[in-house]
Length: 130
Image 1 (tube, rainbow, N blue to C red):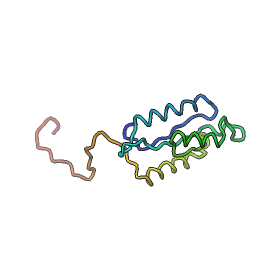
Image 2: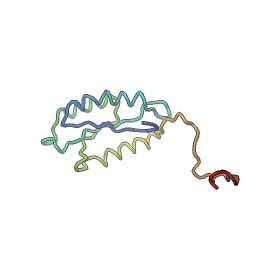
Image 3: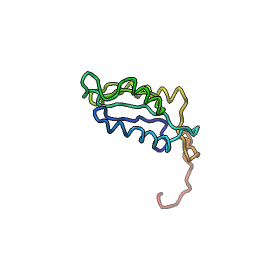
Image 4: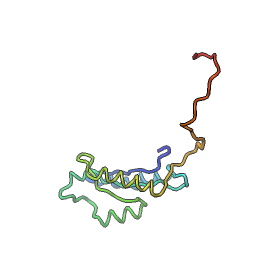
């Protein structure tokens, strides 16, 4: 989780026990991963393996999942299929747009920054590596 600024929480729509773990996973993320403003990072919920469901039906209704998303502070929900790519790009774009629109930055215990434009310091001659 170190320095994450957002997360996907993914469950299997063909296995109800995986959905039952979502609240535990979200709680773990909310407790351990914060933004630079000391708030929980945004999480997008994904119900994967939608391609294996008959007519796109699974054990939750749209109303039930919408309520669950609101109750557990997810920024949204997508039904996805990693196998055929259903909603994978859309979910990623949604999460990135949320990060950018809300200027989410990761929390870091190490406030020292690295300047990648700085020229390397000149080493004195000698030492073991010259």
